[in-house]
Image (cartoon, rainbow, N blue to C red):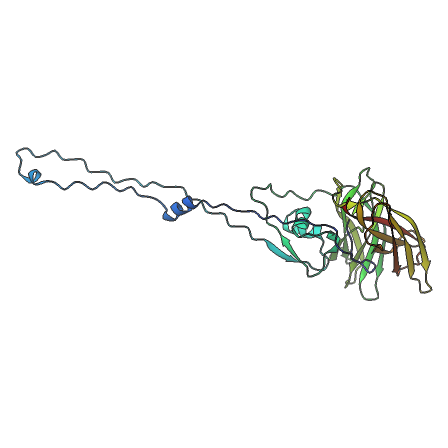
Length: 340
């Protein structure tokens, strides 16, 4: 599940853990010591001191002996020890996503998430320090980021904010027969000549997008420049291989929408655990105008926050729409498995 910054988006407590791995370098002491000498010379054995008898004159002079050839140096190969990789600390900046940071440093988003014990990759905080693990010794090189699977963006609505910001709401639709995960979009603000003014990324509020379903996103530019146009592109979407700690067995038996005089709305309802595991759910509430465009979206936990099999939790949230009045709302629920 992924999330997005936005005027109607909140964060909840994390949902995943993992652990960090670091490589070890083994040094060869013997070779390093020999490497420090550079090479070894083999010295000749000293000639024996001649005796007195040998000094006495002799009618027949002794035959000259061959002059020993100087020894040849024996060169031993040296090995330069590989330096121990030093992990990098990255401080999360405004607009960062886990996927974008992973791409920046050429590491897997899963490895980065595991190394930092990130339960929910949508919940990165500005100023948060992330450990960028070095590649493992002997590990295969990082492959280029795969092309996102063929999901599509629909129901776009853009809104200038009174505070000077700019917000884009929309939905990603999964037309595939398989569920997809890690769905993220990038919004680019353009000037009149098509030049790039600013870019921000955000994930859908549902971490898993089931086959045939859609999920909302919200991308916020707090201090938007004057723009002429914008574009939205899917930058990440992978076919779901395994659920892991993710939990999808929730239902929404009921919910109701109430509209206040000032145009804000209150949505309340229940979420039921329809699976066999203890789980922590959250509800994603998306409000639409009469044209079917999203005008407000919010993620909200339930009360109680943890549900056993067959148990129900309540939720209640207030939202202020951007643009037109709210005509209807939709509630979806997913969560984190806490075990049997």
